[in-house]
Amino acid sequence: MPPAGASDNLAIPPLDAGGLRQSVNRGISPTQMVWNLRSAFNVAALNCSDPKHAEILPRYKVFLKAYGKALTAMNRKVDAEFKARYGAKFTAPREAYMTSVYNHFALPPVMNEFCNAALAVTGDMAGVKPAELEAFALRSLPSIEVVYDDFYRRYENYRLDLAEWNAKYGPPPAPAAGQTAP
Image (cartoon, helix red, strand yellow):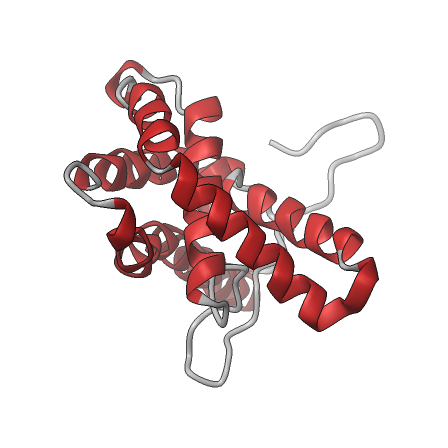
């Protein structure tokens, strides 16, 4: 069975030249890392509703208030980076990228582990000064990304195990018309 209740046909990102999964959180500027961390906190605040994750929403609100000016500056820098890359029509590529960031963080089979990681990272931000926000993001975003790396590794192992099983025993029979797979 696929890990964490994932579908059996999930597309997993390929490995890059360094052996890491390609991700919206890799190969990006420090400014974009801050913005992606803010996006992770936003997804967590909206989706992590288990009582054990109750502190995420109030911590996110504190984050937005405490770092509001720094986040506004980061947003402008991200706009400038996209404008430098795409020219005057940078808005559509930026919005498409941000949609992929939010979708990445909201991957259903990883949600519980994501929420656990977001809870830990939001707890680590106490005492971080606005001038330290970039450094905080550089060390903290990987603590969230590792959840996805682990899931994809487990999913890849599932596929290898399934291929081995199918080679040894054959694939399971297809359901008859009108039936569903078990």
